Length: 188
Image 1: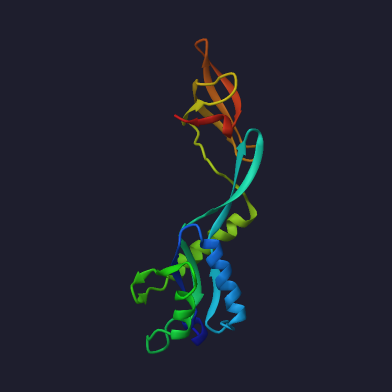
Image 2: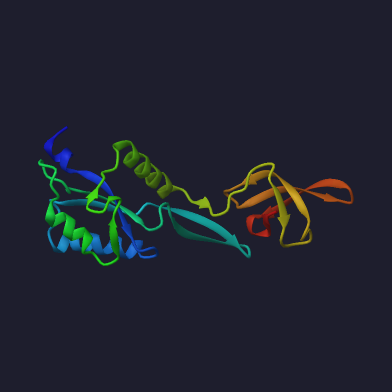
């Protein structure tokens, strides 16, 4: 492990809920203007894209993996295990930052496997969009819209690409497969 690798540690930063993107953008902008490139290396807001179908229209939104938190790659402790004041105050004095994960004045670095897991999850979600609500085969659902409204059924098949479910609904005592969109059903 090189000296540079020892400096580059990932830390969890607690921020005001709902202001994660604002704090992220502020940190990134200030990194450039205050020339903090030798102290703060990367700021990540772990998110994924999710889709939802409402009234027949597909919409995409962004969902945070860890609401109220950012992960930041920075040089926070020197070789003598003392806080690097410039980095500490740079992050702490950013509007919207509450503090670091760990004890009050002794942040704890994330383990490399934790960081890799989170970054892999973020990279994996960049290319694909997940449905906001997920259903499982065999799950009992209630039809909320359409000709079978208020009837219960069992999910038989799931098509996340089209946002459709095949649900087995009992009609006149016989089970009938009905194709429904996600927004037409709700959990029982």
